[in-house]
Amino acid sequence: MKLQEIANKIDGRVITATNNGSMTYDMAFASDLMSDVLTLQNDNMVLITGLATLQTIRTAEMADINCIIFVRNKKVTAEMVKLASDSGIDIIECRYSMFRTSGLLFQSGLKPVY
Image (cartoon, rainbow, N blue to C red; front, side):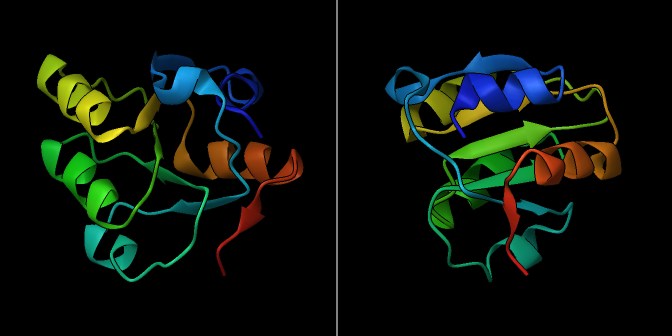
């Protein structure tokens, strides 16, 4: 799924779109525990989280995750946007819960990591 397609499925708002939003995402993982995120080794994965901090962006960068969806109406800061843009990470903000967001994306064809 492309970035804008993901955003449309969850009524999300694209904040950063690296590579002109052309990257395709195949899998998703939902967690607020960044230690769990660091154990993942999948390409083209979306991270779904409510943890809107700089540490989330840094963790995604270390785990080679190129897209983060911030759920529960969490807002990213300008500093987070800059770090994500510099790191090539797409960001979507979504008002839905993590459970609803995950369900919508699963229903639309994104595969779970586990």
